[in-house]
Length: 258
Image (cartoon, rainbow, N blue to C red):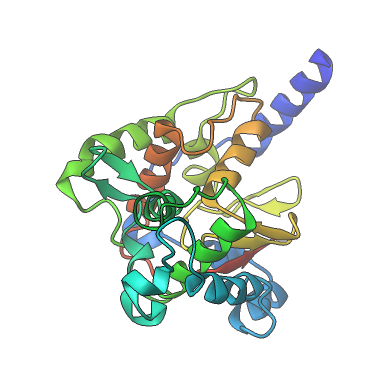
């Protein structure tokens, strides 16, 4: 086991030799830009994009009454294509009640608990992914604005610290791949900039939908680090930093990725 780990570490060291620093705004690129033409075509056509099946599920959930309050999302917010326009582009956002940032999935669950008086959806559940995909779709093509609230500055700073921090048995930071070596390849796959413009996504490797938190946990496991728990404060801070570094980039959710 130790010899195999050393071999992987050496391979990564050889594949990731460059230290380039943070990406200039003019050089930022979405994960869409790194995909094959076939995968781009799949995302671009709503009739072929498998993430749209979740959106269709969520259209039913949006109007379904739930909880002790017997309310639907539509009862409070009205038509999703009007009330949710641009909403996902500003999440994670500051939540005054907890004086901390919450991501879009947490916001959905807060609404369930507080307004529908219903049990929150589990992380990565079909329902939660569907509703966040539906809401995110209403921001498609709109610029990301997350992180522009001054109250979020400490959390953005914490997320940046985590992004730059080496961790795990492979002693790698997020920035080693996504800032220093984007556009190169590792194990046959393109290294992207990690710009989270399309979440939740349908990932071909997963054959299903997944949140940004799932993707981050997968990266942490890949470098042999202890993955953050779903919805942990550091997880939300890292999400917030990633969205803030993509500020101004257009959303393309729900996206397809390899």
